[in-house]
Image (cartoon, rainbow over the protein chains, first blue to last red):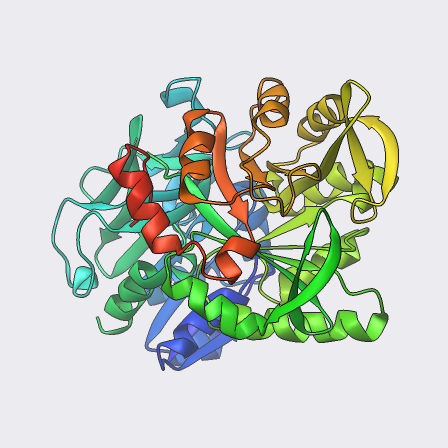
Length: 201
Length: 251
């Protein structure tokens, strides 16, 4: 069973639908016991880093997530992926879950000013390092992004990236902890293949 | 780099997809769920759902259909039609929408754009504009193209961006359903004043119209309904044609 952590941030409908579509058992939950009893964890999220971290703290799940991340596969998606890092510079400076080395920084500051931010739409995801999560996925398939901040200084954990003037960190892994900047649940077939790969880890 | 997008639009009324010409002569076309599945398989980059149902019962039916589509189509969904409050945003987002498109509701109360952008993020708020030539200028129309608001379209687009709209859909009433090509003159007039992504709508009749559209680099997506519903243009073939002609598309 996959636990999708509900901490009041973002839309969980598509994520749970896509897992169900793949025939996978999932549970949207904010209960510590259910997260502990699950086989895998997904940490979703949209919105601003500071708010999301504050909400996660309110649920009292920060320690649970940090603990469970060492025991079973965890996948952070979009803002949920950013929360896995050490800190973010979105509207100030905020501490993250510190499960992966690196920081979350402004994309606009690192790319040609003519390019639109948010980086929104379909972009190719190029695999740098093979990993079991790519079991069904081919390098160069298209995934769907919507974000204005991105992970950097995380070369060691980067499994795949996209190009948007600068290299945009797409998929990361440290130990059993994975993070996807794009939305696999909105990336058509390619996204479903990655979710299947994660579910079979 | 980000691909140019091809977006089929489903106008849903009383549980069915319908299509008109110049916003009139509305005709029944298909079952929305069946059609959405077809678009998912034929490589659409996104789907737009417009609720053109008037009654409250129709609205409940629409959210049921939206939920049915969203639970098996895993590409971005934009939903519009009758959105006039944050509660409306909430209602459709909970049914699986990723973006919400505002039109008449934003004309009536422009602060809806900023309030929604603040709560759900800019990327969630799409400003949809129905534009028609009146005299020598481009005017914004409301209520499904029936009412001249007197608002200048260029000015309205600029204000929408300032208030936090993350994307803009430009529907040309003059070219809607005519299938003689997109309204490039109108698109250029507005393309020069905004920096957010632009979705062009109204007038696509053949594959070449999309190539012409994307020659103007300020356009991010082409939206159409009738030519896709009738299978006169197949989305996969269209994208292959665009790719051969140098347009960056997702294949």
